[in-house]
Length: 147
Image (cartoon, rainbow, N blue to C red; front, top):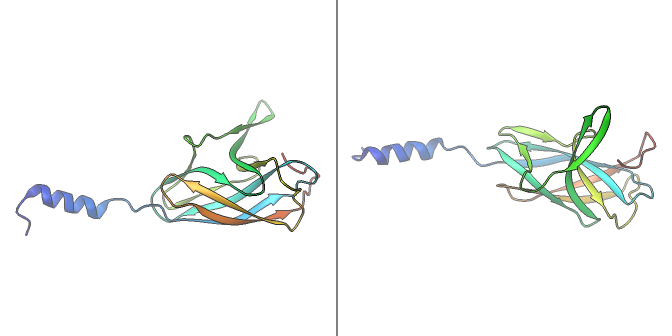
């Protein structure tokens, strides 16, 4: 039995502290870029632990950054998300980067992205270790190479 009440409190607090994030990334895809020098990529980030924040992304095929699309008076607007702002990956939840919302913007492409190509993204987090995901390039069905 612990004789000091503070020691008992610290022991209980240590046992109930939230677990760190347990991040996994899946379903990576990008839209075919044709001759455009930029493209968008999308992934699903799952977290089976404590909350975290997606703060950045890297790729060797160009310059990658996080962006968010929103509608303003019927006009789509895109804004970069600064690493200090990041995007929340909820505890025991997921963050889905998707068309018309948050996404990875890849600019200054070193080569055109064509259907079937694969590229690698490394996602950086505030707490979790960086996660790599393979991204498959899908055809631009609507004719738009990128947004």
